[in-house]
Length: 283
View 1 (cartoon, rainbow, N blue to C red):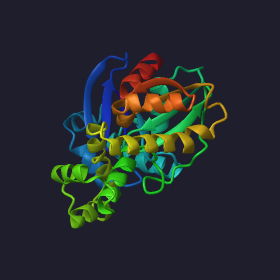
View 2 (cartoon, rainbow, N blue to C red; view 1 turned 30 degrees about the vertical axis):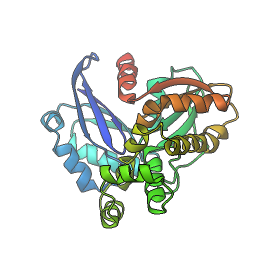
View 3 (cartoon, rainbow, N blue to C red; view 1 turned 90 degrees about the vertical axis):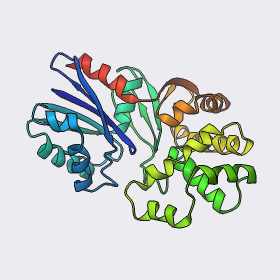
C-alpha cells in the first residue's frame, strides 16, 4: 500500500493506492505541521484515524508533503514518527511546495507556484528543480495574503476600532471575540495559525463590502509584491495557485494578477488530486 499525504496547517488529506495505482481509500486527519505540534499530538492524530490505524502495517511507501517541512530537522522529526507508526513503510517527507508544484505543473514546464491557504508560500519551478527567494519565518512574521493573515487583520482592526461599525457588529455576532478567549487560542492552545485562519471565512463571505474589498485587494497585492515579484521571470511564466484562499478569492486574485501584468495559470483548491495523478504515473 502507498500513502500520499497533503498536509496543511489545518487538515491533512490522505489517499491510499495499491501497487497498481488503484485508489483504496481516502481519509483526513487534522494538520500535522511539525513546527507547531509536539510528537505526542501528531501521534494522537494518527492513532485517532480508523483507516490509518487499521492499515498501519500494510503501508510500504509514504509520500508526505507538509507545511513546515522545509528544513532537515523538521523532515527527520516527522520521519522518526512515521517510522514508529508505519513500521514497514519507507517515508519520504517534503515541504508542501512540492505538492503544489506536482499538482499544477507538468515536469519540464516552467512556472511560479504559490500556496494561498491557511499559510502562504511561493516558488519558481524550472521544470525540474524548485527555487525559493523567500525563506519563511512562519505565520507571525510572514504568510502574506493567507487565511491567518486576513484573520489577524480582522482581529486587529476590530480591536483598534478600524472596522466599520456595521461590519463590526456582524463580526461580533459570528465569533467569540472575548479578549481572554482570543489570547487563550493564540498563546496557550495548539495551532494558533489555524485559529487565525478561521476568521478568513468572514472576509470571504462579506467580500463585496467596501472594507473587505479593500483588505483583500491590499493583502493579495502584498503577496504579489513580497513573493511573486522576487523572481525575474515573474511576468513571463504562468503563476499557479493552490489553497482555499486562492480558490474562494479567485475573482479577486484574477484581477490582482491582471493589474500586475502576471500570467494566471492553474488555481486548484486541493493539491491532493493532482498529487495522486502524479504518483499514479510513477508507480
